[in-house]
Image (tube, rainbow, N blue to C red; front, side, top):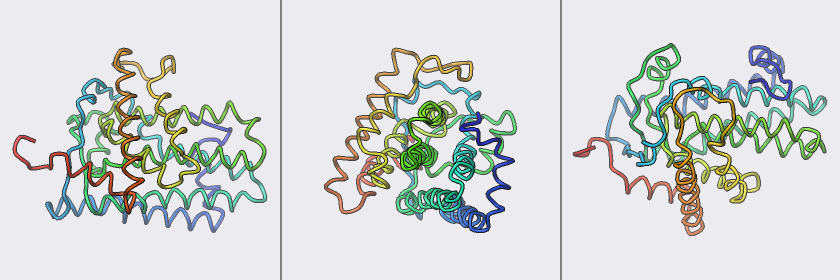
Length: 294
């Protein structure tokens, strides 16, 4: 899906790299992703038990059927924020470089922010041994699947649509772009649904990611916005991938759990010394990998 007339990603990336400061920012982001996301997981695989790994599955996950047709949407999360960057570069003109630089740097900070928890407690879920097609093969080959809470997929897409809304508002362009912004938010919701349909995350991971974003930037993702985000999940009639879907009767309970757990984290966070404490307490209450029966 192309949004905001930004064009395809293969055209956006060269435009961004042609701006020296933006090119350097993208390189720094790639380095940070490697340092904060990939390397710690591979280290945990090679040297197990140095960092605890919690199983974060929830019984409600079983009511969300595995649907491999969602994998393309799942993998769209990088292209999602790159399209936003491409639009901002074209739309902001004189201030385009500064605006996009700040946006890219905020995506980098998300990885650093989430790593504050990952280095203390890793997490995983049960995912099918499904390797049909190049996309699933690459996912299983490159992702050790040890950083589920909080979900960076969800954090990034939330940052994307909320930051875009703030920037459009500062440009007095929010009203003119309202319909397009709604499409951007819808894709953020679709990617969030996709992580559940392809079994890369649990419903618990969504709550944790929302809480993390309320801590990362409370002004952009306050509790009211989080509640609206949950209400948008699994909306009917989106023209999304065919195949098994969540039963309509289960949607209220799934939304209710995600919202309730998010509220719990927020309330516990008010009394905590550090934003990670509610999530660490939650992870410590769950079974660890290697424990008998799990």
